[in-house]
Each structure stands twice: as C-alpha cells, then as structure tokens.
Image 1 (tube, helix red, strand yellow):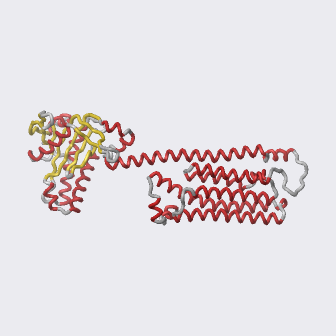
Image 2 (cartoon, rainbow, N blue to C red):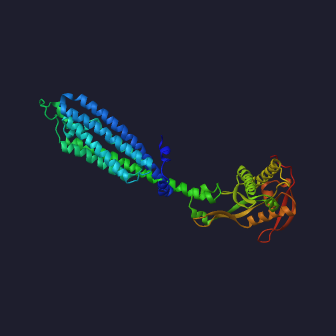
Image 3 (tube, rainbow, N blue to C red):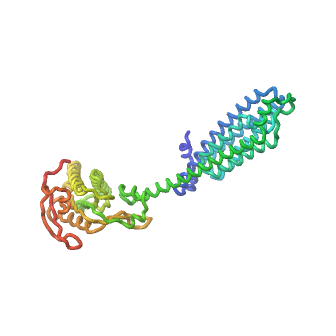
Amino acid sequence: MGFFQLNAHRSDASRSALARTPVEKLFWESESEAEYTIGWVRITLGIALFASGLLVSSGTTELTQENNLNQLRAAALITVFAFLALGITSFLLVVSGRFRPWMAFVLVTGDAAILGVSLYFALHGIGLAGNWVAALPTIWAVPLLLAVGALRYRPLVQIWATTATMIAVVGVASVLGFRLSPSGIETPPIGALGESVGRLFSLPAYLMRAVMLMLIGLTTAFAMARSRRLLVREVSETARRANLARFLPAEIAPLVGENDVATWRQGRRQQGTVLFIDIRGFTAYAEKLDPGRLSIFISSFRRRVMRATEAFGGVIDKFIGDGALVVFGIPEPQSDDCARAIACAHRLLALMDQWNIKRGFDPPVRVGIGIHSGELYYGLVGDDQRLEFTVLGDTVNVAAKIEQATKRFDTALLASETVVLRARQQCSWEAVCREPLGGRGEHVAVFAYTGTKPAG
C-alpha cells in the first residue's frame, strides 16, 4: 500500500491540526512520506545487517571462539529486530497520524544507537579492535542512512543524524581501542604487507574516514537546505499566482506573476481596441427563468464569449451581468487589433445564431456589439486582498455608447470610423451617424456592417 493510500486513514483531528499554510502543509506531507520510506529502509537494512553478520561470523570462525561466535549471531538477531521495530514504529506513527517533526530526531538517534551496538558486538565477537570497524560490511549502512535522510528536507535533522552516527562509530572505535591483530591470537611478526594494512587501519586513516563521512552528511544537509529554499520560493510564487488568477484574466495573471505588482498598479497608457457585448431584452428572459436555469443561461453565454475571445487573441476585462468587456492589444498593441476585434464580433454573432438553433429560444437571443479603438489606460487597482485588472478611459466610454446605439439603429454590430479604417474594411461598412459620444464631446462617426456575413 502506498503512502498516500495509508495517509488517507489519518484522523480528522490530525488533519485539522495540521491545516497550515500551503508551504507548511507541503513540507509536512513530505516529512511524513519520508519517514514512511525510511521505515522500509530500516527494515531492509536490518535484514542486510543480519545477513552480513552471518557472513562475517562464518568467514572468521578460525578467529572466533565458540562463545563469542554465539554472541555475534545473537547480536545480529538483536540488530535486525531493532531495525525492524524502529521501522515498524515509524510506519505506525505516520499511518496513525501521530508523527510529529520532533520525532525525527528520536528516530535518527535510534538509527545511530542500533548501528553502534551492531558494530561493537560484531567486532567484539570476532575479537578485533576498534580500528577494524571500517572492515565490517555494517559500516556501509552509514552513507545509506545519511543519503536516505535527504528525503526529509530538514537540514537540522540531517546534521544531528550525522553527528549521532559519528558519535556511535567513533565511540565504538574508542572503546575497543586500536590493535592490528585479533585478541587472544598470536601472530607472526608483521611483514611489509601487514605494515601497509596496519597503516590503512591506523588513527590518521580513521580521521580521514571520519572527515569524509562528516562531509557526506553536511553536504546532504546543505543540499536539503538549498532544495527547501527553492521549494519554498516556488510554492510561494505558485500560491501568489493562484491568488492573482482568482481576480485577474488568465492572459494577465502570468504577466503579473513575473513582474512587480507595484509596476502594474502604476498602470500604462497605450493604444487598444475595446469590444462591448450585451444581451438585448435580458430582463424579459430573466423573468421567465428560475435561478438554476438562469445561472445555466448566463454560464452558457459567457462560455461562448470566452471561446470567441480566445480564438482571436482578446482579453476579457470583465463580465458585467449579461454583458462583457473585451480588449484587444494587451499587453502590447498589434497592427491587426481592430481586424481581430471585428472578426471576434462576427464569431460571437455566429455563436449566438447556433445557440438559438440548438436551444430553440423563443424569442431568439439577440445581442448588441460596439467596437472602438484609441488610447486607454490599463493596470491593477485594489489592495492585496482583492486586486482587479481594469481598462479605463474615453475609448472605453465611447465603445460602451456605440454598443448602446445598436438598439437605436436596430442592428447587432456597430463600430467607430477609427476601427473600420484601421481594419481597412471601408467597403464592408456604412456610416449611420456622427454624434458626440465621448466624454470630451468630440463627434464620432459610427458605422454599421453591410458586407457579406462571414461563415461560422
């Protein structure tokens, strides 16, 4: 059974107690999963140490007295059961939801203690001194335990594990002393080869081994600290982007995440094209629908607006009840903004016709669309709790009034002269009025589409 399956059995009380920030929750889950994995490593290690103990004892029978041989085998059994017990304990702590961060220090201390006891009895049973500790297969459990400890993403635990392990190994070597030949066995004078072997098991060589093991532990602790910092940074940025995405258009949120929010709050003035769309006679529709059906109706309308907007590279600034404000030219204006806005309008009208045929609306759903292009302001407004992307300016006001004019001229699509000229579609449009639509009282020429209706 995997960790996440086992993790599902945690109590509700434990879940609520651990409901912290997203970063803390992520590290907590990582810590629990690490202890679950390390539990399996402890069990595997115990079995491996038991096997290595039997191999060492059978290969050194000529150096070992019968009583000591039995003692060596008993120590191997104790070691395997100790690691099994520690591994099962870590399993139960994780599965039951009782595991807490401070317990990791206790568990790694147990690892070091079991390792030290195993080394001591193995050497003592064979009759070797402490300087022979590096010759035992058991010693290779040290880098294994240090390596698997990197799963925790907790540098302090790793530093303590390194320290406790070194205390255990050095303690065994110190207690048993330094001696080349086994105790109780007389050996001939040591030759050149023996002297070379002796130097490998002398104090200077052991100091070098100890330094290397310490460096392994400290290096993994450094790597864990660096990984933790990177993970915190990435999770924080992801959470920040997710919060922004709750309030900002999908096309804008990634840009804000990559730049300073303060810069976006200052805003920017540039050329842009604004499209307003609104459902005609929506009040009559709303009166006939219950709340559930009304919600479905508005959601279906907005999906069609989003589909058309995405197809032509627009940005939905906001939905306003039964209408929407769409902007082309953000974050950077393009030469074909007006042409894309007109194409988007045609696509919207086609989608409305398809919707009417599919649902059989009676009377059919009708919309009005107004388009204008010019200078506008866009940026972020609000505080950190609720940022809002918005576009402001005379261009927005004129586009809204052109959309309202579709009622007066009983047409679905109107655009300003500026839009028609920039799209280079003069032959497909006809002027219907010239009046002061802007906030400054300037006269704006309004055009209606007279060309052939584009397909779908």
